[in-house]
Image (cartoon, one colour):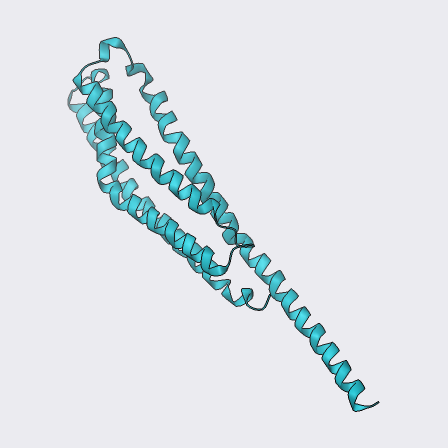
Length: 199
């Protein structure tokens, strides 16, 4: 066998090996990107669910208070406070959904995907920094809307205080766990870099 034939065979095998390596990387990338993409889809669902569920739950819970006899200054201030928080949360949920909707790990470049995940993380962090103030506002708003439904004795006052303290603590602790999940998602997207080169 002549040297030229050997070179041609070598180039052919080298080309096949390169194609196999690219195919391997592509398959590994697709496998590894499934988990982060599922997390992104789950976050999209949570954004839509949050957008719909908060107003629906409040309307269902407070609808007995929407009577003409209940229309006084406390009711209107309560509605204004509650509505302002609902509008704020709706804006945040829509922004989050639109960012997440724009992420497609299979078609976007890694840089684009990482940028969008970081943008989502920033919106999430701002939202939960504001939660310290937002939650008391919505709690006071709901309390004012339902004011005439309460008989303010010691038991009721203690129950309302306990409910506020417990839900406020949950409202502060839960986002920290969620934040670590968002950071893990960001890390998983960045780790895909090794498999995006060369295909």
